Image (cartoon, rainbow over all chains, first blue to last red; front, side):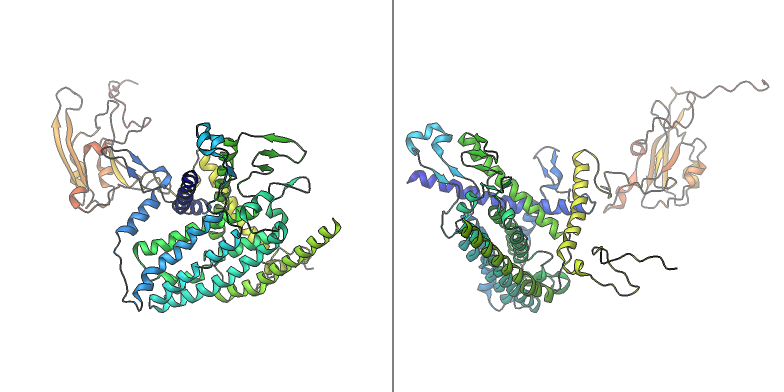
Length: 381
Length: 198
């Protein structure tokens, strides 16, 4: 019992550190990547000075995130005379918390057997094994969507309680857009659920370590390339980033639904957005890029297509899986930032038309084709 | 008589151009292909610049300004003053006060010193100060100097400040300019051949 508790506390600490770390580092990645994409140098002025010395740690501007956080902490917490004080105070947290909770069901590694990594723990842990996932729920993907759709409440509350026309307009835009794209998100992965026959994320990852057509790894992106594109598009729209940043279109709506927020409350909205980038990357990795496994890898080692097996020690597998997951997440995050700094913003009617008249039929067609193909294949077998 | 028009049907990614009426073909209307092309362009720039930085070269066209000298000053730009030096590092200036006399803004202050050890140039500037809050960068001091001791370099002086009193530059800072190849006059001075020799 205590053993389980220790393991899960470690998991939760790891997940929190991962998300907060990604949220902080992504602000730096975003700045630097945008700079490199436009032939600039990027933010490189903030530094930490080692006390009592003249040594300044600049580290390529990595500490600009800290400077931002400090600025938001010490800024005046200005509040409007709002219609609803309570909703105004609670809205940033309602937007921020569900984003963190989503990560509970995402597996960030295979199975952990503590006794095999540290033989000293053998008498205490025995042969207990723990999947590297905070909550092993059968309904994993459903939990993701359930928590994901809670974020819209935060945006709506923020816009409504600010008693500001621009905020309210932004909140309305956020509401309609997020609900629309939440649906697209769900419909686009239905084909994948049909193929895997489960919504348990760990099972989905384990099924992706196989071989497809005797050369490719059985990743979701090869099984459902169309769904992968639709999913990523819908996820970026759900996160309200450019090209779908209509709720906070600063040329039209000042800052949208968080216009009236200042200091760390505004920071929470921004932080939630950056953590959501990491969450989207984790989900995309889990569903479409083979999760924590390298191609052809499973908990015991590698099984290459030619029938060649390579067994690895357990400790190495665990480290490799966690690292693989982080690297894949970082690559998907970087791709989202690439999209954000490349594409121009949609017009508002185009956003909703794009969702309902373009993506929705495509997702449905993808689902129908997948169902027919599965029926034919299983009928043949 | 007309040159054969390119057949847009065969190359849907080419945009058809009328003189005032841009039209999107099905290729552009499909959006995805053009998105991928745009991402390839920006991603290519990103990869190119990242590779440059990783190989230790500069992957940006902007300048990290105060640390890095700007490349876009004209060669003859009258930026800030420098004092030229003799090979031993002493200033070439003989404290004749001609620059201070000619200066229309009266920004140069020189206090002469006496060095009996240097027989050729016993007079030297003990203090040489320029007030940049009043300098008009006309370059007359450079023209007036008989010893080529004061010059102006293209880089501008770097002191945005809150206080006029801090906009002075002293002798030490003026003497930081030290190119290896450019010594204004040979030193010790060439001995001229006696008058009348061929």
